[in-house]
Length: 218
Image (cartoon, rainbow, N blue to C red; front, side, top):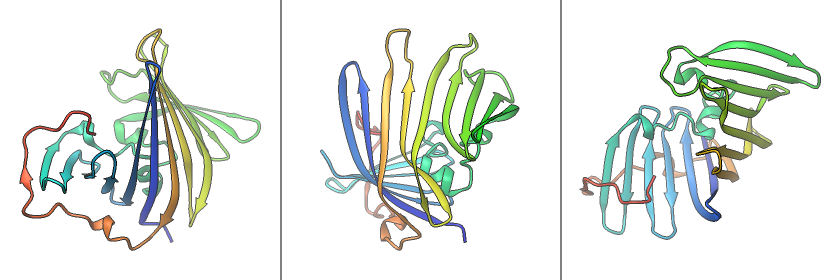
C-alpha cells in the first residue's frame, strides 16, 4: 500500500560567503502536497504550503498570520512530496513543463536522462538527471550557454514502507563565476503514515492577518 503521510526532522545548513546558517524544523507532508513545517528557534512559527503556491505563516506568540498565493511558494519540489506522490522518478520535472529528450544507459545500473523545457523562457536550457538502480542521485541544470547553474546530489537512501527516500540532499547554486551557495538538507526520525495531529494543523480562526512577510522568513 502506498504511503500517504510522512513526518521528519529536517536540518538545513546553508554556506554562502564563508558563513554557515542552520535552520531546523519538523515537517509533516501528505500525498496531496500539503506541507506543514514547525520552527522552534529563534522564534516559534508554523508554515503551511501546497503545490498550488498557497502559503501561510503563523506566529503563535502574537497570533498573527501572513497569507499569499504565489508560484514561488509552491512545495512541488519538496523532496518528501516528490517521493510520497510517486514523482521521484523525474524529480518533478514534468510538473514544471520539462519533457524527456534522451536516455543513455551505462554499466552499473546508471541511467542518464536529459530533459528540455516544453516552451522557452524557463531560464534553463536542459536538465540532466542521473539514476542509479532506478533511484535519482544527481541533477544538473544548464543555461542557454551550456554552463551548469545548479547541481543537486541525493544520497543516504532508506526504505520506509514501500518508499525509498533520500535522507541527504546537497545542492549547489552558482550565483556567479566566483560565488556559489551550498545547501545541505538532512532528514531524520522519518515516520510514515503516522497519526500526529500536526498533519492537519490549521491556523486558528481568530488569528490577526498581517500584510507584510517578516524579513528572513520562507
